[in-house]
Image: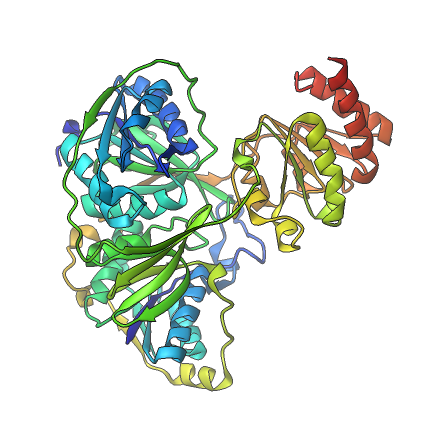
Length: 347
Length: 260
């Protein structure tokens, strides 16, 4: 493999029902940073049916180039045709780096692609940098520069490892949604758009979709919220979440919860923050009656401002909170909600 | 019908994670268990066996002590156990691991391969789909329901806000979620069988159609640059005040940061 032939940062621009997923913009945002260091460009790879019109959005969020693979076989996500699409892009364009969102689709697609093109894949990354491998020069061993260093938690968030892929290309990673920052949208920005179709002929690996069943949900996505009011076991009951809902209403936030709350049946799973729930990084995260198990911290500790209220002063949540208040949530919340309402009204 | 279930022995993180004085994980001090998603995959296979009749073979790659999870699987109702163990297979990343397991499976007849979605130590969810690619068969990941329909399987595949009902011709590979089912317990008769069962042990020489350059540490495209315990951001302030003062404190911080 002639590694130097491989150039550019490529990202998979996931779309569902012809709507671009937030992770695509996050990957472009991170891709731009990496591309700036490497003095190269960011290319978004858009795969679907009748999706060409979405290319401008990718440009507005920073893609320099968009490769569009448009085919009726790609209407709904299926592993085989999507794998063929990305593997064909890799074969033709030879990217140095290829990033895919660690979504349900991305974590199905990426391993199949990497197995087809024979390269390494690092799962569920939370940090990406360009650097040397090995990190420190070892006498008698080549140190490679400008390598993608992929950092990820393992062991339920207890350990963290940085991985490189020095001898194969592209360097591939799936990236956890909600961790990387989107670039600012530049309305009217344009990218070079190139159409590419490697041909899609159904074979035995094309599974048949018999039905698509959408869950009916009217809840907002907690990953998009700027302010989260999150409750744990300490809230005490489903009814008592009213206190958190009132606070969320007053401050313009959204209610989320810990795993214990989902296990108790107080809130649905799509509101769960943490290792087995969603990773969030809102501007403000209220952790209310949440002890702060390591699996929970893994999903929220990147929040800008963490405010914790807990009656147990030894709760681990205080180890990550910017502002910790030891006290009774039942007394504090009603008064806090009232004062925030007053402060907002006075503005 | 012949079903292969891939299982992994993993450290149990439930009883707390233990660290060596130097800060690395003390794997020896932690109990080991059958990886939960794999156990759900095994249960799914055993239910297919109960309903349609099937021979269930469990396969694992690991140190010789990984034989324990094979015996546990047999005690639950699996028919055969295969341990793939060899010094040259150590240090494998997901590419080399999937090459190894695919190389072992090429010796076997199968209609269905079931793996867990991901293992709780690595959390990659990569090995199942990679095995399917090496074997050239379809993959359906995140199965939440599995039915057999003639020479095909019909599987509900979970996504974030929806599920697809998919039909694939066998042979195919399915990855299972621990939410799929509640695994059964070992039975006394099963434990007796498991104690007596012969475990097949395979090494490098028994792997079919695999290059040395795709195995073990040397065959792993990804390499660890560094590993450490997670460093968390430091604690901020912590106050213990009466209710009104607590509220004033929070409100003042929200104002200071221009949140309100």
